[in-house]
Image 1 (cartoon, rainbow, N blue to C red):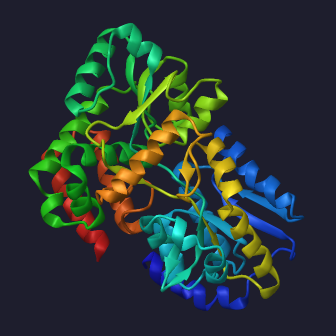
Image 2 (image 1 turned 30 degrees about the vertical axis):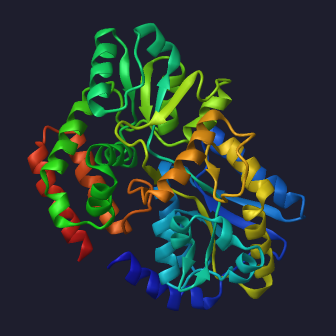
Amino acid sequence: MTFKKTAGILTGAALGCAATAASAQSVEVLHWWTAGGEAAALNVLKEDLASKDIDWQDMPVAGGAGEAASTALKARVTAGNPPTAAQLLGMQVREWAEAGALGDLTSVAEEESWGDVVPAAVQEFATHDGAWVAAPVNIHRPNWLWINAKIFEEQGLEPPTTWEEFNAAATQLQEAGITPLAHGGQPWQDTTVFDDVVLGIGGPDFYRSAIIEGDPEALSSETMVQVFDQMRTLRGFVDENFSGRDWNLATAMLLNGEAAMQLMGDWAKGEIVRADMVPGEDILCVPAPGTDGAYLFNTDFFALFDVSEDNRETQQELARSVMSPEFQKEFNLVKGSIPARTDIPGDDFDACAQTAMEDIAEAQENDALLGSLAHGHAQTSAVQRAIFDVVTEHFNSDMSSEDAVEELQIAVESAQM
């Protein structure tokens, strides 16, 4: 049974029972922000709500990219007891909205003119059938390459702008006894790298065709073979203990000099700052090879579930807090992302965030602002999982690039049925 069908049943049954909401002045929030920098960022929202006499009931579910949190959320909804709000990624918001499970924030959004300050690409996930159903918290950029500046300086290396340059630099680092690429062997991390390679080798139009549209021709193309060839090369640049490693532990390798580079989203900045290092100086930030001018994005949303009438006013207050200019600034300064609002000045943000603000504006103009597959903004959960499986199987085996392309096409077609 598909997620959508399951959610539809839950809507008619569990949600119809009326959720057991918390008290009128409390919000129960399910999320997966448990790493050090993430937890610190979330405290900004907790403190803001506390100033309004709204109690935060925490429901953290650890696990990068939110797989475990998604499972926990479905269990809560199945039991007829959804949380007040949940951290969701774009396609998750869309699926829950289609199931009729989310509350309506349109009155708040129109009162505060969200439509004028949130990028259209982000609004596509925050709205459903003309109604606002979620409040965007931030905009992350997964296609960053993070570089230990000291190692590169000692090795006489410049930040790579193409995959050929990356491979040459990684080879030199490896010969010097340095792990070139910090990586954690988890499906979402493997596919974060895959996203970067697809965009870097194929360009924005190819990424849109192959990943967002799932076009069979693009999926089976020679370009996709080249993508898997590069993935195989990258597999040779990670250490032997990468399997199962959490992303923040991979970032720690970068920070302490155990590795020279990491392909990871800008949530890594939270760990950089906590280590008393400076993004853009101690740890350099450049677009992943070949992706300059394009911008992969993922946005964290707080989706407000359809709960009792008594708790809706508190939900709307949560949404107002999330979208306030003050919160958007303070939260994203800590989190490492940039605000979901485009009217927040970049003066107080670090060099990497300022670059991101400039780059996202350019990408919007060039139609190169694209949802990330790895981070839930490109495909349905079924197709996303199917691609995860192929990418991770290839990365952890001797599967040829040609076989991987064939498996990819079959997997996507099967998941679309």
